[in-house]
Length: 60
Image (tube, rainbow, N blue to C red):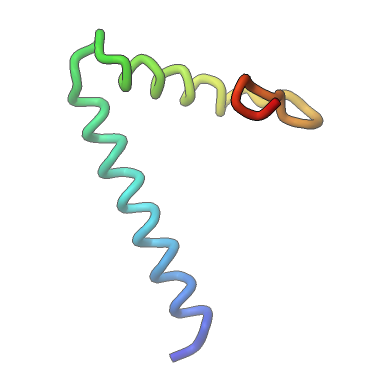
């Protein structure tokens, strides 16, 4: 088996796991902390700032 075949299978598994988690979060109540955080992350991913990422409390 070629390395590229293994790489694609790993990428597919990661994508499926992410989509499964996303569906789980979307079924949660709107007031759930996980859902509020996830909605914020989706919005931030759409608008990325240029340059170095900001440092947050745990990274300083």
